[in-house]
Every structure is written in C-alpha cells, then in structure tokens.
Length: 294
Image (cartoon, rainbow, N blue to C red; front, top):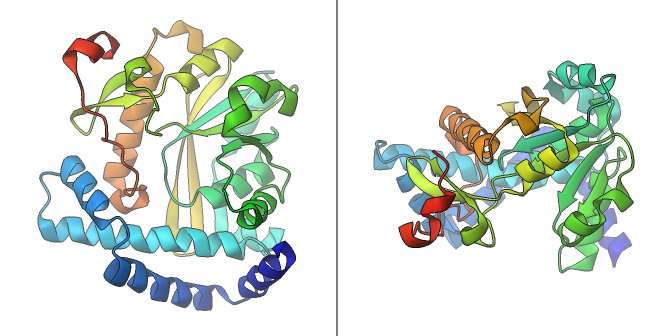
C-alpha cells in the first residue's frame, strides 16, 4: 500500500506549481465552505487575539489562514520530486548568522511558532545549515502516511526524533554537533508545571522544556520566523536570542520567545496555526500564580 500511495503522490508532485495551487484552492473551498473544519476554534482564537479588529477583518484572516493551511500540505507533496536547484530558487534565509556560530563549538536550539510552511523550513535548514538539523515529530497512527511524511522530511538528511523518545533518547539519535528545531508554542500537557506568560494580553501556559533543555546543554537559542514572500516562495528570518542561556532567570527566555511569536503573528496574522487550541487552559490564581513570569 505504501508504494501505491507514494507513487500517486509522486505523480501528483510532478504537476506544475500553478496547477497544484489550483488544486489547493479547490480543497480550500471544500474545507472552509462545506466542511467548516474547526472554524469555531479559529474564530474563537481570532476573537481572543484581535478583539480590536472588525468581524470582516477576522473573517479575512481566517480565509487567508485556510488557504495557507491547505497550501502547506500541497507544498509538502511537491517536495517529493522537487530538485535541489528548484528548491533553492524558492527558499531564502539569513542562515549565515547560524553558520557563523558553527566554528565556536556551540550547538543551536531553534525556537519557532506554528508558522507556515514548516515543511519547507525543515528542507531549508537541512540544506543550508552547517549543523545537522534535528526535528521532533509526532508519528501518525496511519503507518502508510506516517512513512511517506517521514521519508519526505529526511530527504536532505534531517534527523527526526519521535516525541515519545525525545526526552529519554535524544543523545542516542544525536551525537556531537546539532541544530535542534522546536515548535515551542504547543499547548502544554500539564498547565500546573508550565510558565504562565501574557500572550495576546491573556495569561497563557508555555512549556518550560525548550528553555530548560537549552540551559542544560548550553546551546544558543535562535528564534526562527518563517513565512511566504509570495505563493510558492519562502523566507526564514533567524534572530539569535542568546548564546549564554544560563545567564537568564527561569522563565525569562520563554517569555522572550512568547513575545516574539506574538509580534510575528501580529505582523502576518494568517501565517499562524489558528486551528490549534492555544487558550484551552484557564488561569487559576490559586494553582498558577507562582508560575507567572512577569
């Protein structure tokens, strides 16, 4: 079954970009207008993040977001057959600031929000970084699609670690130099062990693991903001937050990260994964006040 599905995706990936985007627009119409996939979650999130915007403005953001969401998966299929030359024409970044750190001996921890297109960034990082690029992923229940996505992501030698093995087996996957990429804005599993930080003017739990890992391994922390410059073309802007994470108090680096995600989302609102229930947990002063990072 794997070879049948992969073969179909490969043939689909050979279509010109403009045809792929026509297909994406058709799927968008079904997802947004017919099935209404998680529209209630999207609009609830937008109401929290942008209370000052009109209903018309928020609907426009939602529609643009759904276009980006479908494009994300169509572009992932395109990666099956894309050549290195074609990819390099469509992807740019200021990776030189990362590569300049390589000879210092320090490793890298990339922190990013759920921006589009994360599949393109995986490719771009693996191709352009001097460091081996390491990503953490959630395996799919469907083994066929899980293997297809895995094979796409490791095409340029990215190292992928399942989320279930990351904490305990990281150093069995990675030895020596590395640049670890983390989408650090996931909703935490335990809000009682999280940092609570103002995010779009609402106290929101953030997982402490990325900050703690950077301190434990003394890695540089780099914020990565990635986005489309136009349809089919992608850019990553990297910003070094620190090369000395242990000089910061607990929670400070996570707060800096949260603020940078918020700034990036305000800059390009439709570039964020609004189907994600970022504000599911409610702040409880009795349980969470000591975890607030001012």
